[in-house]
Image (cartoon, rainbow, N blue to C red; front, side):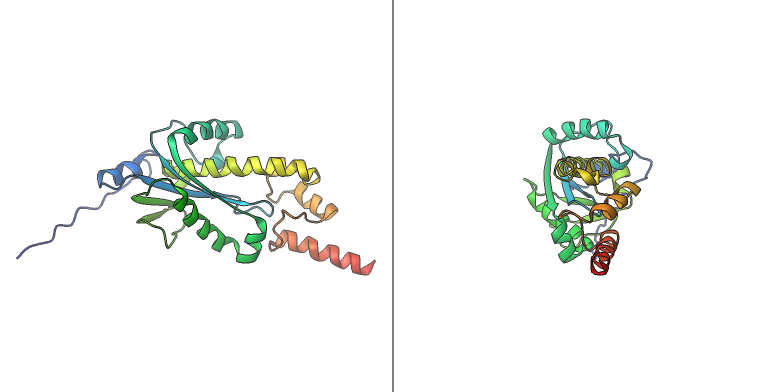
Length: 222
């Protein structure tokens, strides 16, 4: 009787370094490996930006984009882009309002992977599973802190979106987009109360919808 051989599963310790997932998968012949992450999920204005990254060499200093300074993110972005395969998807506020945030996020991750110039053998996503990807995948809890390719994707998405929000600030300086990048802050709330939302706000989000309702009620009373 022939006994099927099953390879022993790899165990990746979360303290094994940022490249531990990539090394373990590569030992199984699963390379190249793509990491996928997004920026702008919690904002009430501006786009959702999703990035997929295949690193072609190790880059020192990678980490969760939210824990890095803006200067460090820009420096790492400039290091990542020339030595990586990258796919970037930008989802505007109107599409988020029409389809819903999570649906746009999942679709954006699939589209970002599809933009990669080569096919990954394995895909790591940050936080939640993404059905319909073109290769086996694993959702990694806080993946941007423990997997290099996901950290790289988080930096690419964050820097891309931050640059877009700075450009948006030039069009709508009254909201302070260059400072808060579209997230809800006391200053952003005050700007919404004073000026109402602009076309680049997400009208389906509670903070924006509330201000729209109050402005409409005020206009009706007047």
